[in-house]
Length: 139
Image 1: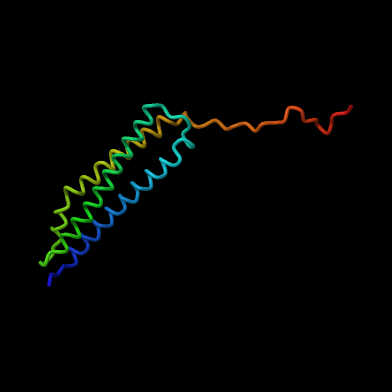
Image 2: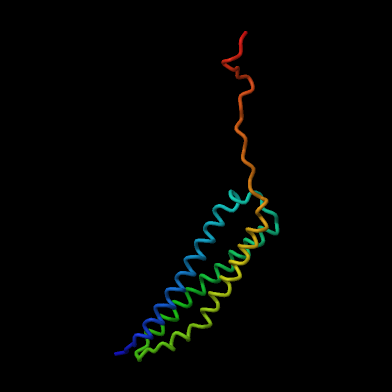
């Protein structure tokens, strides 16, 4: 039966936790920007739309990298041998596939936000009836 020391348990837990957190943030950012971009930022230019699409694609790559990290960690634990903290390093490639696209996508979202500051949608005026008479009018 395989064993795992406390340091290895902490390393696997930490790697799993941060991977899940990055996946959650990526999913939330994509969901919010897809849902509310036009309502919050108004009409978007072609460049702003391109920034969003590239950021969304990078977030998807990051999410897939996170799945790869978790799969690698699980696979490492499945071996019938003693597990040490250094075994977490086997997921370094997968972690970089998750982290770097996340960082770049987040920077692109920040640039998008800065560029689109002046795009806020104009409030729509409430129509007023043109034939309404005021109660103060006298005949």
